[in-house]
Length: 164
Image (tube, rainbow, N blue to C red; front, side, top):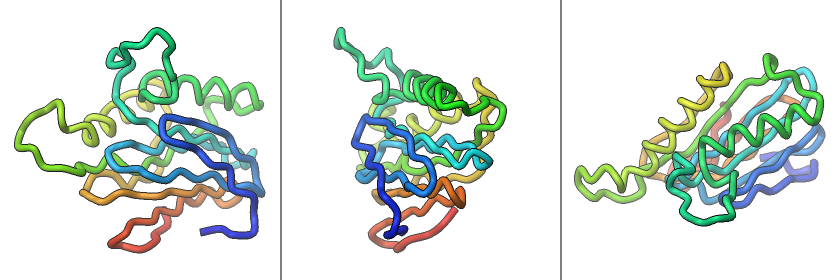
């Protein structure tokens, strides 16, 4: 993991942007999915920490757009565009979506796999290619993205740190 640069932190159901030489990090990716949208030529990246697949699941009146795959990816794209990023230059790297608990075949509990499916559906809708992913499994992850090198560092308890 990068240590010299400033680290922009993204909380659960949160999003933010980092520009080189900053890096951007989120922790606690269990069933949640970390979505990194970046422009390698401008060396800028946005990260959204998706908790749930669909904003229809949000019953409250004040919707946290970063919490859901459908609203979070859209909001992140708008934020990147406001920073001068051209939509056709955006690529994605995703990580998370673990099945943290085994409950048989109850589909409502399959939040991790459903989050991954929803993220992929939204990225496809916006024609954003997924360059790399580390999804599924049963381990939580911490991810950190470096916009300067377009490297996503993924740390898990049982597998150490890998780069994609």
